Image 1 (cartoon, rainbow, N blue to C red):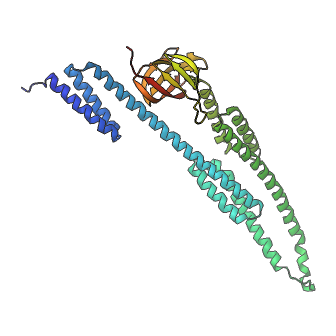
Image 2: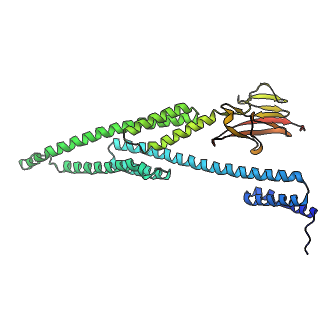
Image 3: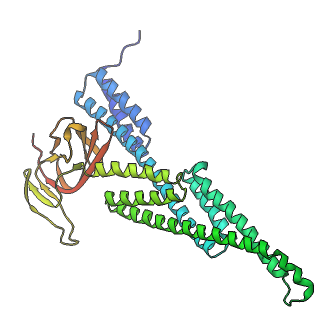
Length: 366
């Protein structure tokens, strides 16, 4: 009968597995690293050795899983940014197409509109949303054909006015009627173009406000752009803007909800001492001497907050589920570190804030 491995042998296997995890993490082989960590924890449980390390192992597994989830969210955000950039490029091409259309270069305008459509398809626009642009291309194609017919007719009109060509006058009423239709079409087109230009200017301003986190101004500009575009039948295209407004309202709510430890201060033994600024670039600095309590200041109703996570250099250190949300930072340090706080509401929304500190703490208190 095969004997069970001795406790010391199990502990040794666990340590060997833990040594392997270092290389696996460097190689970013996270799934394999988690597997090795789990095996090591199982061996330590069976051996009875190093019980305190078991908790550390599970904590590290949780940290890796949290990191992978954040990486996934980052990739999704990166993809969204790419799509927004593609859409902005398409809007720029649309501007150029409208200019060519205004100047009467219908063939070049058609090519630009088609290029814009390809980019809009890449950015996620549906066939329904592209319907107006395709109708515009069809209209321009018809204008181009009419333009060619008129040019051909003008080329066939003789230079002199010999009697045998007097019969051409019979077509004059038809030409006048077509000219009147073209004028009406041009007037309508110019009006729509003016509205489009005003709308795109509002959208450009809204993007600037959005980057500056002036959400109310951004929303106001987007709403006015939607009103103008809807007035010329661009109702499908404005659906994206409506979605963007909803996102901005959530961003505004999250931006205003949470604030970390006050920046630009000197703290000693957990107490605020004075304001600080970096002499080199006049930027706010934060210096912490000795251990300190990190607070998450919830600027709205904290009863809606399910939990708050505290990160130290990107690694989760503590999760608080009851207000006031805080964490005691008590680590050995002589260097700069980043503290990040993420809050989670019961409604599924998140908010975050961070602070870079020069943390000097040569001793750890029990």
